[in-house]
Every structure is written in structure tokens, then in C-alpha cells.
Image (cartoon, rainbow, N blue to C red; front, side, top):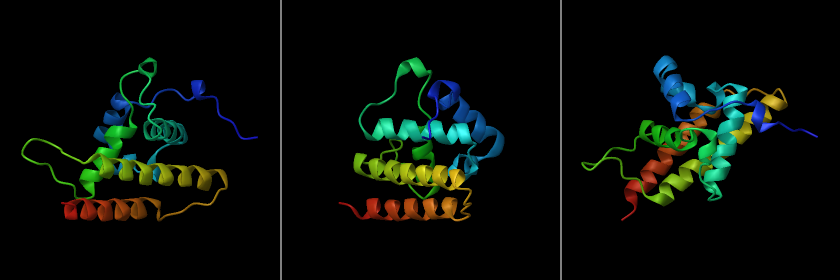
Length: 138
């Protein structure tokens, strides 16, 4: 049976995400650009957030999943309002669900040694479509 001990994976929170973006740029947070440990950790974080569990503060400062989702939505065309970034919860939930599915797909691709060059572009296209739908909502 396939298993991973989460305790051996380390941490992937806001500080690690910021370091990654600052050193390699925003594309470094696309699922196919993350290393195996980061990918597994963000998969668990997305599952926790989508199931309503939130972030366990014993894991350190902040989950990488939420700021990663917001960054990718902004890169997909979501624009800031005068008051800051205002995203409806339904749009954020849809974006995080899409990201979660894409992350899990990347994990399976790596396990089966089936590289897929289209993961990053497909994710961004899906997020762009979510942004367009969000702009059309009243």
C-alpha cells in the first residue's frame, strides 16, 4: 500500500511559499514545478481547507495552499478592487477545488511515471475561465 508519513515531509507554509516565489517566480508554485514534498504537503492542505478543517497552528505559520490559490487566481486575471482583493467564497472554493484536483493529478502522474506537460497551462486556463465566470456574476 502506498503511504507517506507526513511527519517526514517537513513544512510548506507561507514563509516557504514566499521564499519559493521570491527566488524562482510565481510559476514555481504551479503543481508541476513543485518538488515531491511540497506537492504532497499542499495536497493535504487543500484537502483540509476544502473539508473545513482549516489550518492546524501546530504546523507552523500559515498554509501555503490559500495564498497559492489567491496568487494563481490573480495571475489568471482576477483584479484587485479599491478596497483590496475581494473574491467571493464560491470562486475561491472553485479555484481551490481545481487546484486540488490538479495537484492530485500531478502526484499520480509522478507515481506512474507519466509526465504531463499540459498540467500548468490547463490549470491556468481553468482558472481564467473561473475568473471570467466570477466577473459575470451579479
